[in-house]
Amino acid sequence: MTDLRDIHALVTGAGSGIGEQIARALSSAGARVSLMGRTHTTLVSVAQSLDHKSQIAVADVTDRPGVAEAVERIVDQHGPIKILINNAGGAVSESFAAGESDCWDEMIDVNLNGLFNTTRCVLPQMKKLASGRIVTIASTAGLKGYPYVVGYCAAKHGAIGFTRALAAELAGTGITVNAVCPGFTDTPMLSRSIDTIVSKTGRDREEARADLTRMNPQGRLIEPAEVANCVLWLCSSAAGSVNGQALAVDGGETAL
Image 1: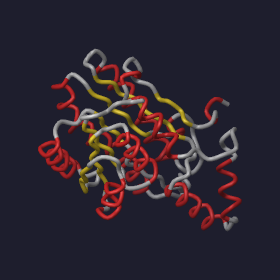
Image 2: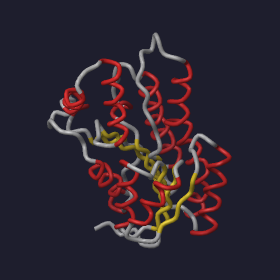
Image 3: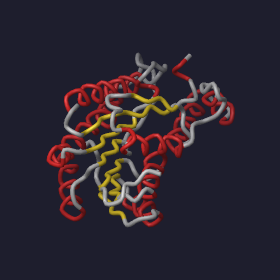
Image 4: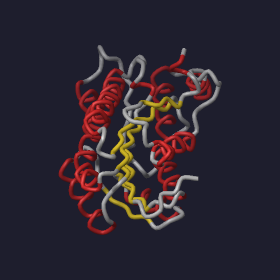
């Protein structure tokens, strides 16, 4: 069993879905978990349900000064961060030809600039400790292309490039940098994606969900807890030599 007692972990986008499950897994392993997100009420709800005492930091990862202030505050209160989970993100679906540039900017900002902002704030602490784990929740959209999500795919490919380059730069420092790439996962974000499909195509909701499910050769959606278990392993001492990797949790979708 992974033992993370007395280790301070920060999870962004921790108010629901994959981020919430990662926070639960880390807390169950004994970590002191700081939850970062944009909505106070959802963060409080998650914090109250965790196994160990946690703290919340209301911040938007795209707000660089806001992230820096939030990180400084939680470090002052709870000690240096040794685990950073860059989970915050979002997806918008639209035709590239007909889409607005604002959509592109939004996807790059939340999915790529956001992980830069949090990592830049946390990394100096890890360097002083000569120890740390940085795990970014990317996507199979960082390993392949999907239609109508060009901005999202570009940002997630960038997140994997960020992971590999930073891992190479920090190799030998005691800090590892990896990414986890979930396939279609049963989360509120997936539900919103289905809503978009229904509104734009007029298709039945269950039919749209079934089409996404069929993308997984196992014929099912990924569960958020499965992604969390992969993250938990990457944060353990057992994964000390795993660095610069993009691990797909997709039932074999990207193997085909």
